[in-house]
Length: 129
Image 1 (spheres, helix red, strand yellow):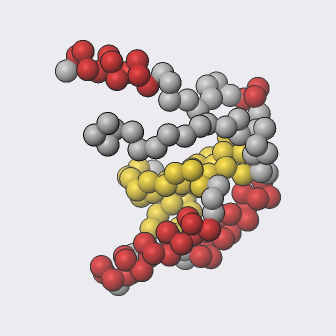
Image 2 (cartoon, one colour):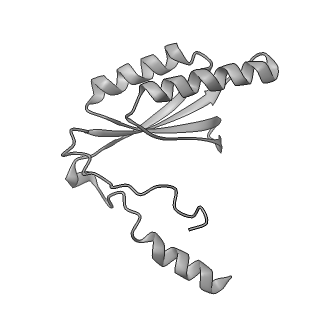
C-alpha cells in the first residue's frame, strides 16, 4: 500500500474498557544544553511514553503558548492527577501549560472516535485537486 496504512487496529469502547476520562495535556518543552540537551530530553520523554501505555498520541506543534500535546486515557480523575505529577517529575523540562478533560460517558459524546468517515473526505479532496 506504499506506506499509506501504518497499522491495522481496532477502536475499543473506552468506557467498557474501564476508562472514564480522555485528557488532552498541553505542554511546553524547555530545552537546555543545545543539541545534546535536546537528545537527552527526547530520550526521557520516550521513556515516559514507554512507561505509560495509556498515552494514545503525542505530537509537537505550536499554539496556545505550547509546543506539544499528549492525548491519554484514564480510569478516573485520581489516575489523571498521578499521571500529570509523574510527567512533571520524570520530564522536568516539560511544563504542563493546561489540560482539557473529556468524560467518556455516552451522554457526553457527540461522535465516537472513528476513521470510517475519513474515506468520504479523501474522495472529496481527490476530486477537487
